Length: 432
Image (cartoon, rainbow, N blue to C red; front, top):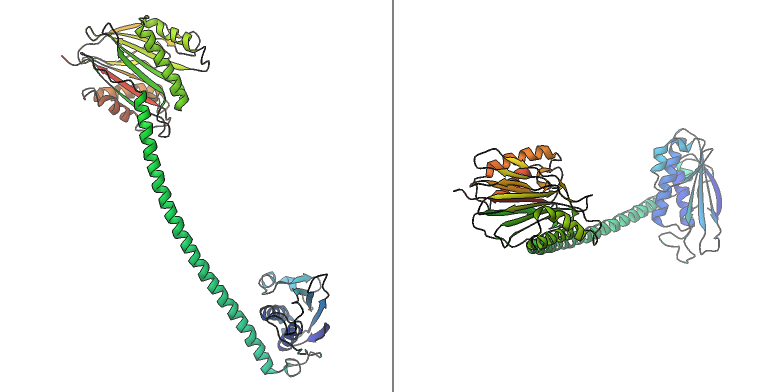
Protein backbone atom coordinates (compact mmCIF):
# COMPACT_ATOMS: atom_id res chain seq x y z
CA UNK A 1 0.00 0.00 0.00
CA UNK A 2 1.34 3.39 -0.95
CA UNK A 3 1.40 6.46 1.25
CA UNK A 4 -2.08 7.42 0.00
CA UNK A 5 -4.26 4.41 -0.74
CA UNK A 6 -7.93 3.48 -0.94
CA UNK A 7 -9.34 -0.04 -1.06
CA UNK A 8 -12.77 -1.68 -0.91
CA UNK A 9 -13.43 -4.89 0.99
CA UNK A 10 -16.24 -7.45 1.05
CA UNK A 11 -14.69 -9.84 3.57
CA UNK A 12 -13.13 -9.51 6.98
CA UNK A 13 -9.93 -11.46 6.06
CA UNK A 14 -9.35 -9.08 3.18
CA UNK A 15 -9.86 -6.11 5.47
CA UNK A 16 -7.51 -7.53 8.12
CA UNK A 17 -4.82 -8.13 5.51
CA UNK A 18 -5.17 -4.57 4.17
CA UNK A 19 -4.91 -2.99 7.63
CA UNK A 20 -1.88 -5.10 8.48
CA UNK A 21 -0.31 -4.06 5.20
CA UNK A 22 -0.78 -0.39 6.06
CA UNK A 23 0.71 -0.98 9.51
CA UNK A 24 3.74 -2.79 8.08
CA UNK A 25 4.41 -0.13 5.46
CA UNK A 26 4.44 2.60 8.08
CA UNK A 27 6.27 0.47 10.66
CA UNK A 28 3.68 0.80 13.39
CA UNK A 29 4.52 -1.02 16.62
CA UNK A 30 3.04 -4.51 16.71
CA UNK A 31 0.78 -3.70 19.67
CA UNK A 32 -0.62 -0.64 17.90
CA UNK A 33 -1.09 -2.67 14.74
CA UNK A 34 -3.08 -5.30 16.66
CA UNK A 35 -5.31 -2.69 18.25
CA UNK A 36 -5.90 -1.02 14.86
CA UNK A 37 -6.81 -4.33 13.16
CA UNK A 38 -9.25 -5.27 15.93
CA UNK A 39 -10.87 -1.82 15.95
CA UNK A 40 -11.34 -1.62 12.18
CA UNK A 41 -12.74 -5.15 11.95
CA UNK A 42 -15.09 -4.56 14.88
CA UNK A 43 -16.66 -1.54 13.15
CA UNK A 44 -16.84 -3.22 9.73
CA UNK A 45 -18.26 -6.55 10.95
CA UNK A 46 -21.95 -5.59 10.73
CA UNK A 47 -21.69 -4.02 7.27
CA UNK A 48 -19.77 -6.92 5.72
CA UNK A 49 -22.13 -9.44 7.29
CA UNK A 50 -24.98 -7.57 5.58
CA UNK A 51 -23.22 -7.86 2.22
CA UNK A 52 -22.20 -4.25 1.99
CA UNK A 53 -18.57 -3.38 1.18
CA UNK A 54 -16.48 -1.01 3.29
CA UNK A 55 -13.80 1.36 2.15
CA UNK A 56 -10.41 1.73 3.81
CA UNK A 57 -8.31 4.82 3.22
CA UNK A 58 -4.81 5.45 4.58
CA UNK A 59 -2.26 8.18 4.14
CA UNK A 60 0.63 9.69 6.00
CA UNK A 61 0.48 13.33 7.02
CA UNK A 62 3.83 15.11 6.77
CA UNK A 63 5.40 16.06 10.09
CA UNK A 64 4.63 19.56 11.32
CA UNK A 65 8.18 20.50 12.23
CA UNK A 66 8.70 17.36 14.33
CA UNK A 67 10.69 14.19 13.66
CA UNK A 68 7.65 12.13 12.66
CA UNK A 69 4.26 12.65 11.10
CA UNK A 70 0.92 10.90 11.54
CA UNK A 71 -0.68 7.91 9.91
CA UNK A 72 -4.35 8.57 9.19
CA UNK A 73 -6.59 5.54 8.63
CA UNK A 74 -10.27 6.03 7.75
CA UNK A 75 -13.00 3.38 7.49
CA UNK A 76 -16.11 4.34 5.49
CA UNK A 77 -19.31 2.29 5.80
CA UNK A 78 -22.93 2.74 4.76
CA UNK A 79 -24.21 2.38 8.31
CA UNK A 80 -24.28 4.71 11.34
CA UNK A 81 -21.25 3.72 13.37
CA UNK A 82 -22.28 5.84 16.33
CA UNK A 83 -25.47 3.83 16.89
CA UNK A 84 -23.57 1.25 18.96
CA UNK A 85 -22.35 3.44 21.79
CA UNK A 86 -21.07 0.53 23.88
CA UNK A 87 -19.07 -0.92 20.99
CA UNK A 88 -17.50 2.45 20.26
CA UNK A 89 -16.50 2.90 23.89
CA UNK A 90 -14.86 -0.56 24.00
CA UNK A 91 -12.69 -0.20 20.89
CA UNK A 92 -9.08 -1.27 21.54
CA UNK A 93 -7.92 1.86 19.68
CA UNK A 94 -10.27 4.87 20.06
CA UNK A 95 -11.42 6.54 16.84
CA UNK A 96 -12.92 9.83 15.76
CA UNK A 97 -16.39 9.46 14.23
CA UNK A 98 -18.02 11.61 11.57
CA UNK A 99 -21.53 11.75 10.14
CA UNK A 100 -22.20 9.45 7.21
CA UNK A 101 -20.62 6.41 8.82
CA UNK A 102 -16.85 6.95 8.95
CA UNK A 103 -14.24 6.40 11.65
CA UNK A 104 -10.74 7.82 11.61
CA UNK A 105 -7.65 6.81 13.56
CA UNK A 106 -4.59 9.03 13.87
CA UNK A 107 -1.34 7.45 15.02
CA UNK A 108 2.12 8.92 15.42
CA UNK A 109 4.60 7.43 13.03
CA UNK A 110 7.96 6.20 14.32
CA UNK A 111 11.01 8.21 13.31
CA UNK A 112 13.10 7.26 10.26
CA UNK A 113 15.01 4.03 10.82
CA UNK A 114 16.75 1.73 8.47
CA UNK A 115 15.76 -1.46 10.33
CA UNK A 116 12.02 -1.20 9.83
CA UNK A 117 11.10 0.71 13.01
CA UNK A 118 10.30 -0.29 16.54
CA UNK A 119 8.14 -3.35 16.76
CA UNK A 120 7.27 -3.16 13.04
CA UNK A 121 8.34 -5.06 9.94
CA UNK A 122 10.20 -3.95 6.86
CA UNK A 123 8.66 -4.43 3.48
CA UNK A 124 5.21 -3.94 1.99
CA UNK A 125 2.33 -6.36 1.74
CA UNK A 126 -0.06 -4.99 -0.86
CA UNK A 127 -3.76 -5.20 0.00
CA UNK A 128 -6.46 -6.46 -2.32
CA UNK A 129 -7.92 -3.82 -4.59
CA UNK A 130 -10.95 -5.61 -5.95
CA UNK A 131 -12.72 -6.55 -2.72
CA UNK A 132 -12.80 -10.18 -3.76
CA UNK A 133 -13.00 -13.30 -1.61
CA UNK A 134 -10.36 -14.68 0.69
CA UNK A 135 -8.32 -16.11 -2.12
CA UNK A 136 -7.96 -12.74 -3.75
CA UNK A 137 -7.64 -10.52 -0.76
CA UNK A 138 -6.49 -12.35 2.33
CA UNK A 139 -2.89 -12.71 1.28
CA UNK A 140 -0.65 -15.64 2.10
CA UNK A 141 -2.17 -17.72 4.93
CA UNK A 142 1.29 -18.35 6.39
CA UNK A 143 2.02 -14.64 6.42
CA UNK A 144 -1.31 -13.91 8.12
CA UNK A 145 -0.71 -16.57 10.75
CA UNK A 146 2.75 -15.17 11.34
CA UNK A 147 1.25 -11.68 11.75
CA UNK A 148 -1.35 -12.92 14.25
CA UNK A 149 1.30 -14.78 16.20
CA UNK A 150 3.47 -11.70 16.24
CA UNK A 151 0.59 -9.60 17.57
CA UNK A 152 -0.19 -12.29 20.15
CA UNK A 153 3.43 -12.34 21.29
CA UNK A 154 3.42 -8.56 21.63
CA UNK A 155 0.19 -8.74 23.63
CA UNK A 156 1.58 -11.46 25.90
CA UNK A 157 4.81 -9.53 26.39
CA UNK A 158 2.78 -6.48 27.30
CA UNK A 159 0.69 -8.58 29.69
CA UNK A 160 3.82 -10.05 31.28
CA UNK A 161 5.28 -6.57 31.72
CA UNK A 162 2.08 -5.33 33.33
CA UNK A 163 1.95 -8.38 35.60
CA UNK A 164 5.54 -7.83 36.70
CA UNK A 165 4.85 -4.15 37.29
CA UNK A 166 1.75 -5.05 39.28
CA UNK A 167 3.76 -7.44 41.44
CA UNK A 168 6.41 -4.81 42.00
CA UNK A 169 3.86 -2.15 42.92
CA UNK A 170 2.03 -4.58 45.17
CA UNK A 171 5.28 -5.39 46.95
CA UNK A 172 6.13 -1.70 47.32
CA UNK A 173 2.62 -1.02 48.63
CA UNK A 174 2.97 -3.82 51.18
CA UNK A 175 6.33 -2.44 52.30
CA UNK A 176 4.86 1.06 52.50
CA UNK A 177 1.88 -0.22 54.49
CA UNK A 178 4.18 -2.03 56.92
CA UNK A 179 6.27 1.10 57.34
CA UNK A 180 3.16 3.25 57.76
CA UNK A 181 1.74 0.85 60.33
CA UNK A 182 5.00 0.81 62.26
CA UNK A 183 5.13 4.61 62.15
CA UNK A 184 1.49 4.79 63.25
CA UNK A 185 2.22 2.51 66.21
CA UNK A 186 5.24 4.62 67.15
CA UNK A 187 3.16 7.80 66.90
CA UNK A 188 0.44 6.24 69.04
CA UNK A 189 2.98 5.23 71.67
CA UNK A 190 4.52 8.69 71.57
CA UNK A 191 1.11 10.34 71.80
CA UNK A 192 0.25 8.17 74.79
CA UNK A 193 3.49 9.15 76.49
CA UNK A 194 2.81 12.81 75.74
CA UNK A 195 -0.77 12.49 77.02
CA UNK A 196 0.47 10.93 80.25
CA UNK A 197 3.14 13.60 80.68
CA UNK A 198 0.65 16.32 79.77
CA UNK A 199 -1.91 14.91 82.20
CA UNK A 200 0.66 14.72 84.98
CA UNK A 201 1.68 18.33 84.35
CA UNK A 202 -1.94 19.43 84.35
CA UNK A 203 -2.67 17.57 87.59
CA UNK A 204 0.34 19.17 89.22
CA UNK A 205 -0.84 22.57 88.00
CA UNK A 206 -4.31 21.90 89.34
CA UNK A 207 -2.93 20.81 92.71
CA UNK A 208 -0.76 23.93 92.83
CA UNK A 209 -3.85 26.12 92.45
CA UNK A 210 -5.68 24.38 95.28
CA UNK A 211 -5.29 25.90 98.74
CA UNK A 212 -3.60 23.66 101.25
CA UNK A 213 -6.00 21.49 103.27
CA UNK A 214 -6.75 22.80 106.73
CA UNK A 215 -7.65 20.87 109.86
CA UNK A 216 -10.02 22.57 112.28
CA UNK A 217 -11.34 21.04 115.47
CA UNK A 218 -15.09 20.69 115.24
CA UNK A 219 -15.33 20.65 111.41
CA UNK A 220 -14.83 18.09 108.60
CA UNK A 221 -14.17 19.44 105.11
CA UNK A 222 -13.40 18.08 101.66
CA UNK A 223 -13.78 19.16 98.05
CA UNK A 224 -14.18 17.72 94.54
CA UNK A 225 -13.18 19.57 91.35
CA UNK A 226 -13.44 18.46 87.72
CA UNK A 227 -12.75 20.61 84.63
CA UNK A 228 -15.17 20.74 81.70
CA UNK A 229 -12.63 18.98 79.45
CA UNK A 230 -9.47 16.95 79.92
CA UNK A 231 -7.53 19.34 77.70
CA UNK A 232 -7.88 22.13 80.25
CA UNK A 233 -7.09 21.06 83.84
CA UNK A 234 -8.36 24.29 85.34
CA UNK A 235 -11.23 26.62 84.72
CA UNK A 236 -13.12 29.41 86.34
CA UNK A 237 -14.33 27.31 89.31
CA UNK A 238 -12.10 27.81 92.34
CA UNK A 239 -12.31 27.72 96.11
CA UNK A 240 -10.35 28.92 99.09
CA UNK A 241 -10.50 28.11 102.80
CA UNK A 242 -8.57 29.41 105.76
CA UNK A 243 -8.90 29.77 109.53
CA UNK A 244 -8.94 33.40 110.63
CA UNK A 245 -7.13 34.67 113.73
CA UNK A 246 -10.39 34.60 115.72
CA UNK A 247 -10.75 30.85 115.06
CA UNK A 248 -13.58 31.09 112.54
CA UNK A 249 -13.27 29.33 109.18
CA UNK A 250 -13.64 31.41 106.01
CA UNK A 251 -14.61 29.67 102.74
CA UNK A 252 -14.75 31.28 99.30
CA UNK A 253 -16.33 29.65 96.23
CA UNK A 254 -15.80 31.43 92.89
CA UNK A 255 -17.10 30.78 89.37
CA UNK A 256 -15.43 33.09 86.85
CA UNK A 257 -16.96 33.39 83.39
CA UNK A 258 -15.35 31.21 80.69
CA UNK A 259 -13.08 28.18 80.67
CA UNK A 260 -9.39 27.46 80.68
CA UNK A 261 -6.45 29.53 81.83
CA UNK A 262 -8.05 32.95 81.28
CA UNK A 263 -10.97 32.20 83.58
CA UNK A 264 -8.58 30.59 86.07
CA UNK A 265 -6.61 33.82 86.26
CA UNK A 266 -9.79 35.78 87.00
CA UNK A 267 -10.88 33.27 89.66
CA UNK A 268 -7.44 33.41 91.31
CA UNK A 269 -7.54 37.21 91.42
CA UNK A 270 -10.93 37.08 93.11
CA UNK A 271 -9.94 34.46 95.71
CA UNK A 272 -6.69 36.27 96.51
CA UNK A 273 -8.45 39.61 96.93
CA UNK A 274 -11.14 38.04 99.14
CA UNK A 275 -8.51 36.27 101.27
CA UNK A 276 -6.60 39.55 101.77
CA UNK A 277 -9.73 41.44 102.74
CA UNK A 278 -10.85 38.65 105.10
CA UNK A 279 -7.46 38.61 106.84
CA UNK A 280 -7.57 42.39 107.16
CA UNK A 281 -10.82 42.03 109.09
CA UNK A 282 -13.27 43.60 106.64
CA UNK A 283 -16.94 42.78 107.41
CA UNK A 284 -18.12 39.73 105.53
CA UNK A 285 -21.09 41.57 103.96
CA UNK A 286 -18.75 44.17 102.37
CA UNK A 287 -16.05 41.90 100.93
CA UNK A 288 -17.70 41.16 97.57
CA UNK A 289 -18.31 44.82 96.78
CA UNK A 290 -14.84 45.78 97.95
CA UNK A 291 -13.27 43.02 95.79
CA UNK A 292 -15.05 44.43 92.73
CA UNK A 293 -13.72 47.93 93.51
CA UNK A 294 -10.16 46.55 93.67
CA UNK A 295 -10.18 44.30 90.60
CA UNK A 296 -12.40 45.99 88.00
CA UNK A 297 -10.00 48.88 87.23
CA UNK A 298 -7.38 46.28 86.25
CA UNK A 299 -9.68 43.81 84.44
CA UNK A 300 -12.84 45.42 83.11
CA UNK A 301 -13.96 42.17 81.43
CA UNK A 302 -13.87 40.10 84.61
CA UNK A 303 -17.21 38.52 85.54
CA UNK A 304 -17.46 36.14 88.46
CA UNK A 305 -20.04 34.85 90.92
CA UNK A 306 -18.92 34.59 94.55
CA UNK A 307 -20.24 32.77 97.62
CA UNK A 308 -18.67 33.49 101.02
CA UNK A 309 -19.20 31.34 104.11
CA UNK A 310 -18.00 32.06 107.64
CA UNK A 311 -18.33 29.24 110.24
CA UNK A 312 -17.56 29.32 113.94
CA UNK A 313 -16.51 25.76 114.90
CA UNK A 314 -17.12 26.43 118.58
CA UNK A 315 -20.72 27.62 118.27
CA UNK A 316 -21.81 26.34 114.84
CA UNK A 317 -22.79 29.85 113.74
CA UNK A 318 -22.88 30.12 109.93
CA UNK A 319 -22.89 33.39 107.97
CA UNK A 320 -23.31 33.58 104.20
CA UNK A 321 -22.77 36.42 101.69
CA UNK A 322 -23.65 35.90 98.03
CA UNK A 323 -22.83 37.56 94.74
CA UNK A 324 -25.00 35.95 91.99
CA UNK A 325 -23.89 32.44 93.04
CA UNK A 326 -26.06 29.32 93.44
CA UNK A 327 -27.31 29.02 97.03
CA UNK A 328 -25.66 26.79 99.63
CA UNK A 329 -27.47 23.60 100.65
CA UNK A 330 -27.80 22.82 104.37
CA UNK A 331 -28.64 19.26 105.43
CA UNK A 332 -29.58 19.19 109.14
CA UNK A 333 -29.00 15.87 110.84
CA UNK A 334 -32.59 15.71 112.02
CA UNK A 335 -34.47 17.93 109.60
CA UNK A 336 -35.29 18.72 105.98
CA UNK A 337 -32.62 19.98 103.57
CA UNK A 338 -32.78 23.69 102.89
CA UNK A 339 -31.28 26.00 100.26
CA UNK A 340 -29.95 29.10 101.98
CA UNK A 341 -30.93 31.89 99.57
CA UNK A 342 -29.10 35.24 99.76
CA UNK A 343 -29.56 37.84 97.04
CA UNK A 344 -26.63 39.76 95.64
CA UNK A 345 -24.61 40.53 92.49
CA UNK A 346 -21.19 39.23 91.52
CA UNK A 347 -17.94 40.80 90.33
CA UNK A 348 -18.46 42.59 86.99
CA UNK A 349 -22.23 42.91 87.53
CA UNK A 350 -23.97 46.26 88.15
CA UNK A 351 -23.93 47.21 91.84
CA UNK A 352 -21.88 44.19 92.96
CA UNK A 353 -22.13 42.91 96.50
CA UNK A 354 -24.29 40.88 98.85
CA UNK A 355 -27.54 42.57 99.83
CA UNK A 356 -27.39 41.09 103.34
CA UNK A 357 -25.83 38.40 105.51
CA UNK A 358 -27.68 35.19 106.12
CA UNK A 359 -27.27 33.67 109.57
CA UNK A 360 -27.89 30.01 110.37
CA UNK A 361 -26.62 27.53 112.92
CA UNK A 362 -25.07 24.11 112.30
CA UNK A 363 -25.42 21.41 114.91
CA UNK A 364 -23.76 18.01 115.32
CA UNK A 365 -24.19 15.92 112.15
CA UNK A 366 -25.28 18.88 110.01
CA UNK A 367 -23.63 19.19 106.58
CA UNK A 368 -23.25 22.21 104.30
CA UNK A 369 -22.78 21.79 100.51
CA UNK A 370 -21.21 24.63 98.53
CA UNK A 371 -20.96 24.16 94.76
CA UNK A 372 -20.82 25.77 91.33
CA UNK A 373 -23.52 25.62 88.65
CA UNK A 374 -21.64 22.92 86.73
CA UNK A 375 -22.97 20.49 89.35
CA UNK A 376 -26.67 21.33 89.05
CA UNK A 377 -26.93 22.48 85.41
CA UNK A 378 -25.34 19.50 83.66
CA UNK A 379 -28.81 18.70 82.27
CA UNK A 380 -29.56 22.38 81.48
CA UNK A 381 -32.38 22.61 84.04
CA UNK A 382 -31.14 24.25 87.27
CA UNK A 383 -34.39 23.60 89.18
CA UNK A 384 -34.32 19.93 88.34
CA UNK A 385 -30.62 19.92 89.21
CA UNK A 386 -31.29 21.39 92.65
CA UNK A 387 -33.81 18.63 93.39
CA UNK A 388 -31.35 15.97 92.30
CA UNK A 389 -28.62 17.58 94.43
CA UNK A 390 -30.82 17.26 97.54
CA UNK A 391 -31.41 13.57 96.79
CA UNK A 392 -27.72 12.86 96.11
CA UNK A 393 -26.60 14.72 99.25
CA UNK A 394 -29.06 12.77 101.40
CA UNK A 395 -27.90 9.52 99.84
CA UNK A 396 -24.24 10.10 100.72
CA UNK A 397 -24.55 12.17 103.90
CA UNK A 398 -23.36 9.35 106.18
CA UNK A 399 -20.25 8.50 104.19
CA UNK A 400 -16.76 9.65 105.27
CA UNK A 401 -16.38 13.32 104.40
CA UNK A 402 -13.52 12.57 101.98
CA UNK A 403 -15.95 10.56 99.83
CA UNK A 404 -19.00 12.83 99.95
CA UNK A 405 -18.20 15.55 97.33
CA UNK A 406 -16.98 13.06 94.71
CA UNK A 407 -19.93 10.72 95.26
CA UNK A 408 -22.40 13.58 94.90
CA UNK A 409 -20.72 14.77 91.68
CA UNK A 410 -20.78 11.24 90.25
CA UNK A 411 -24.52 10.95 90.88
CA UNK A 412 -25.19 14.37 89.40
CA UNK A 413 -23.21 13.66 86.23
CA UNK A 414 -24.73 10.36 85.11
CA UNK A 415 -26.05 12.38 82.14
CA UNK A 416 -24.21 15.50 80.94
CA UNK A 417 -25.97 17.67 78.36
CA UNK A 418 -24.09 20.84 79.23
CA UNK A 419 -20.45 20.19 80.21
CA UNK A 420 -19.00 22.74 82.60
CA UNK A 421 -16.34 23.01 85.28
CA UNK A 422 -17.66 21.45 88.47
CA UNK A 423 -16.88 22.10 92.11
CA UNK A 424 -18.52 20.54 95.17
CA UNK A 425 -17.37 21.36 98.70
CA UNK A 426 -18.76 19.68 101.82
CA UNK A 427 -18.48 20.95 105.41
CA UNK A 428 -19.82 18.82 108.24
CA UNK A 429 -20.03 19.20 112.01
CA UNK A 430 -19.08 15.81 113.43
CA UNK A 431 -21.91 14.00 115.19
CA UNK A 432 -21.85 14.30 119.00
